[in-house]
Length: 108
Length: 119
Image 1 (cartoon, rainbow over the protein chains, first blue to last red):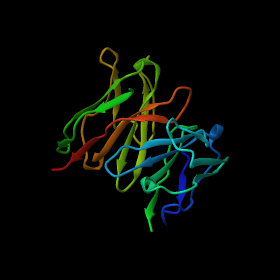
Image 2: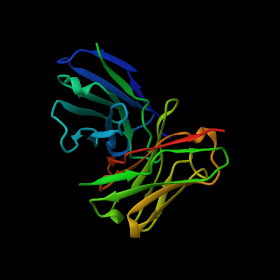
Image 3: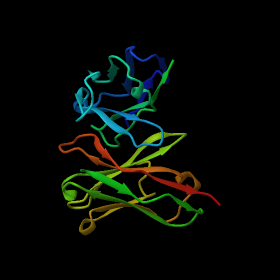
Image 4: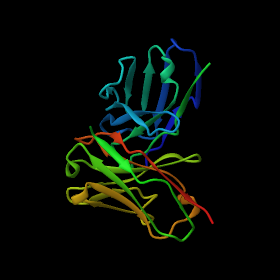
């Protein structure tokens, strides 16, 4: 199965700063089928990005995704207080559709 | 509004059986895959498998193969995951989620069902 490794494990930033989250795959992700999710405490994950770079419905344009092959990035251009949460990447090109272990974005 | 509403929390003993439900509304249930994801503090999010309600085709994860059974009730727009004999390691929060049309990611998530297995 494809193993996804996210870094850093925790990212401490202030509102207004730029966040860069990484997701590295153990082998190439088929068709760049890589998604990003946000999860807040007590809530289900929420889809942010599909197909590496396509924002899901209603997701602000401060969220952007990029990458290809084995290296992918989620960028949040200017952090809003509501953005502090845990972020997961998932590859859905090769079954089983594995998740990364998550990056916790916390307020500095 | 597209919604997936899941069963409430369950507390069970090892060896007991369990079936949890995921009721869909607001879209054509038989046209989208439904996946199941387990979340635990130790292993994070784990993709268990998915089922296509239209014909009950199943794609499952080797890690969960033989451990759980996925099924659907088309008449009631409900998907299920069930265990015949629970273990403590089955404890966690279980989410159902709809797979976006056209080989997409999980675009709509259920409310989650917490399962606690303890003697």
